Image (cartoon, rainbow over the protein chains, first blue to last red):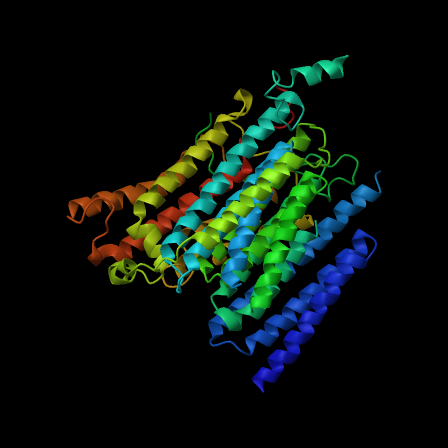
Length: 94
Length: 111
Length: 79
Length: 312
C-alpha cells in the first residue's frame, strides 16, 4: 500500500517537474517562465516529498522532508517576486 | 566501464575544460570560475581514486573538504584582487604581460 | 536567474528521490541545497540591480528613500 | 544506476562547457551554480555524503554568491561588459592532451588496497562516530588547524585591499533595501530557519554526515542573507567581538593541542578519555570561526557609499 502511494505520488511529482522544466525552456518571456517554474516545480517537489515520506523510517526523515519543502516554497515565492520585479525594471524603464 | 570510470574521466575532462578557460578567457572573473572548475575536477578525480577498492575512505574525503574550503578562500582573495584591478584600469582583464614578444604585432596594429 | 530556483527545487527533488535508494542522510544535502539556493537567488537579484547591491523593488520609484538598513551590531570599536 | 551515473557525468561536462563558453560572466555563473548541483549529486553517488554537503554549501552556494557579488562590485566600478570568448586552438589542443593524460593515469594506476586498516582500528579512540569528522578534528588535526590559518590569511588578504578612506566603514558594499519590501521580509524569515539548519548540521556531524565546515557554511549563508536583505548591518573591521569570533576556532584547536601535550599524549593528539567532549568543544568554536570568516570573505573589503572606484 505504502509502496503504491510512493510510486503514484513520486511519478506525479516528477511529471510536474518535467512540465515546469519544459515550461522554463519553451515559454517566451520571463514572466510566464517564472510562473511555470515557481508553481509547477514546487508542486512537483511537494508531491515527491510526500511520496517518499511513505518510505521514511522515522519521524526525523519526515520532519526533514517537510522542512525542505517549506524552505523551497518560501524561497521560491520570494525569488519569483524579486525576479519578476527585476525583469519589469529591465523591460519598462521609467 | 564502471561508474567509477565515468566519474574519474569526468574529473579529467573538467580539469581540461577549466585549464582551457583559464588560458582562453581574458575576463578575470571568468578566469577565476575556470580555476574553480579545475579544482573541482581534481577533487572528483581524487574522490574516484579514493572510492576505488571498495568502501569509501574517509581520509581523502576529509582532504577534499579541506580543499573545497581553501579553494573558496583563494577565490575570495582572487575576486578582491580582480575588482581592484578593474577599478584601477577600467577593464576586468589583465594587461598583456608579454609586450616584448607581441611587439611586432602591436607595431603592425599601430601602422 | 531562475536557474538558482531550478537548482534548489530540482536538486532537492533528485536527492529526495535518491534518498530511499542510497541512504537517508542525503536529505541533509537536499536541505543544504535548498538553503543555499535561497541565498543564491538573493545574490542574483542583487547582482542584476543597478549598483550591484540594490533591491529591485526600490528602483521603480523616482527618488527612493534608501535606508542603509537595520541596526548596528558589533561596532564597539571604531577605526 | 549506471545509466544514471553516465547521464550525470554527461550533464556535468555539458554544464562545465557552458560555463567556459558562455556569452558573459553572468551566464557563466548561472551555469556554475547548476554545475555545483550536479557535482554535489556526483559526490552522493560516490558515497561521500560529507563532501556532497560541503560541495552543495560551498560549491553551489557561497562560491556562486561570491562571484555574483564580484559582478555587482564590477558594476559599481563601471567596468565595461565582457565579450564572448574566441576559440583558442593551441590551448584547446593542450588541454585535450591534459585530459587524455589524466585519463591514461586513471587506467594505469595500480589498484590500491583501501581503506587502510589503521583507520578502522583507530576509530574507537576517536570520540566521534563520523569517520570524516574524526579524521578532520582528531587524526589529522594539523591539516585542519593550518586550514583555519589559511582562511584567516585569505581574509587578511581581502581586507588589505580596502581603500584608506573606507577602513572604518562596514565590511562589504552598502546594501540598499526597500523598507518593508519582499526582500527585507525574506531577510527576517529565513535567518531563524537557516540558523536551525546550520546548528543541526554541526550537531549531526558527530554521528552522521555534517560537521563544522558544512554547518559553518550554512550559518555564513544565513548571515549573508541577513546582511544582503538589510536585516543586520555588517560590522566594521575594527569590531573587537567579531575579531574574537574569527580566531576562536584556531584558538580552541591550539588549546586542545597543548592540553594533549600536557596530558602526555602529544601535541594535537586528543587523549581518548576526553576526545568526545574535546571534539564537540572544538567543533563549536570552529563553526563560529568558519561561519564568520566565510561570510566576511564573501562580503569583501569595506566600501563606503559614493567612493566605489572613484578613488583611483
